[in-house]
Amino acid sequence: MTEEPAILPSRSRLAVLRFGERRIAAIPILELTLFVTFALLPLAIADYLTVFVTRVLIFALLAISFDLVWGYAGIMSFGQALFFGTAGYTVALLARDLEITSIFIVIPLSILIGLGLSFLLASFLLLGRYPPTTIFVALGTLTGSYAADRLARGWYYLGGQNGIPSIPSMTAGSYEFTEGPVFYYLAFATLVLVYLLCRFVVRSQFGLALAGMREQESRILFFGYRVQHLKAIVFSLSGAVAGLAGGLYAFHEGFVWPNVLGVVLSTQIVLYALFGGVGTLIGAVIGVIAIETVSFWLADNYQDIWPILLGLLLLLVILFRPSGLIGLIVSERERIGTFGGPHESSDRRQGGSGGAA
Amino acid sequence: MALLEVKGVTKVFGRLMALNGVDLTVAGGQFHGLIGPNGSGKSTLIKCIAGAEQPTRGTISFAGRDLSAAPPQERARAGLSLKFQITSVLPALTVYDNVLLALQAKGRISQLLLSRTRRPLAHKVMTMLEQFRLAERADEPAAALSHGQMQWLEIAMALALQPRLLLLDEPTAGMSLEERRVTGELLMPIKQQCSLVIVEHDLDFIRDFCDVLTVLDQGMVLESGTVEQIQTSRKVQEVYLTRV
Picture 1 (cartoon, rainbow over the protein chains, first blue to last red):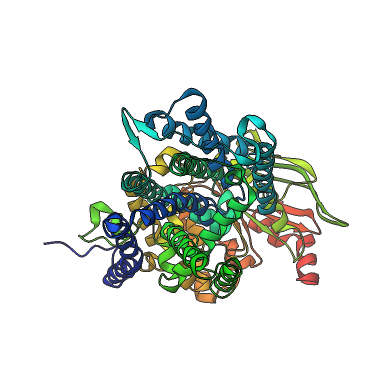
Picture 2 (picture 1 turned 180 degrees about the horizontal axis):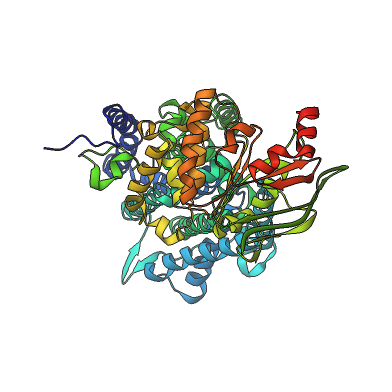
């Protein structure tokens, strides 16, 4: 018979269960629903829509990359397109000039380019002697994105304003990944893997440090956390995810142009995450789905005024629901979650979980 | 050898000289009380020691290391731990997570990424929460605690860092008489764990467990000595009787 543990009175145990039930109620259900829907979607929709949803999946990776930095680490990055576009341009050049299209080279390379470039930028913006302000990092990343856009527009080798068209397909041996269901499932599998990896990170003890940093950065300095290192790690991870998305995008679309590096795309990524709701990974994915679907529908039905309608819609959500769409169904408490609890105390605990994911 | 040596620390805010050449020595295992009237520089001194403020002049050595220019995180890693005057627990996190956050702070990033210490630290977290009478509320957000409990939680977090020197800035501020009494009981066992510098207005509260008292007045050390010496000091009595 299990003895009632002294450190876990019944009232507290009930709180754990209630807490667990609340958590399970929204986020995991949303995650499961969305990913099962994505898994089945190509079976139910036309090919041209599969191509559209593939783009949504790739942009979902980008939105997650922004959510990591802003929603979890409090770094306002207006430069996610820089990592996305640089990786896209690099693999496009490799494919065009060296005929290197192997997925085993171009995808790891995209990740490395995003990782390396973001780490380089983090070294300048985040790893100085004094902690940088939000506006300093926002302007620094914005400048990087803008400069890359201008550079690409003026550089003949990169195709100037027209970019690099007709990129050959990505290959695995003799197999070619052309747009359609196969590329869709490649993007889907990538999204699932990245999502799970990021989920693991943000729910880990490292995630708890990030939660503390987001809550009160100045406080956790006094615990001994090297806050700037934590930020640089998250920024680099997010750059790697954006780079991966850029590599996929270049081969899926078959062309890259300066806009994939620039401020417009960088801002669009910010809007995806804010619209869906930052601080939950699934919120960023929902933001992309909502904005891209509404844009698609508006562009079809209200060709002349759709950007104005979309802008108004975004404004309304950001003004009246700052926590984004996810805030309609997920409570603040569930968004933050827990990272441990009395049930972790293994030598004196009784069964049942219900804490952090 | 002294654990903490503060020499000639001066802190100027604009035209205000908050500290003026303050010297303070804390030996290992010592409980050191800092008292003085409002505005005498007690909190500024403790902030300078913890790294929340940079002294304008003077040096701060800890365990033989000059930490005068070190940022707060390096001082924390060296073994200094601060409990702020204004309660600064993390209200959105659970009580449990607040303590875990402090306990895991010195872990390597790879350990944190893989959650290697989540289970091993669980027992320690609960022991600390029991010690500070918060175990029953482990799963609740820290925001749900009463003011006194938040102060206890913050002391628990400061202690969780396993410091060599704990700096407490008015731990009983805003507490009821009963909470004050309990706080005194909670602080007693700390003596076996680390040294302590405590800022407190209430002389009655700290006289029971402080070995040495330093009295600050207008940014300068007025007197330093045992509780008995301070209580009989004419200079201290003048300051307390005329200004407190």
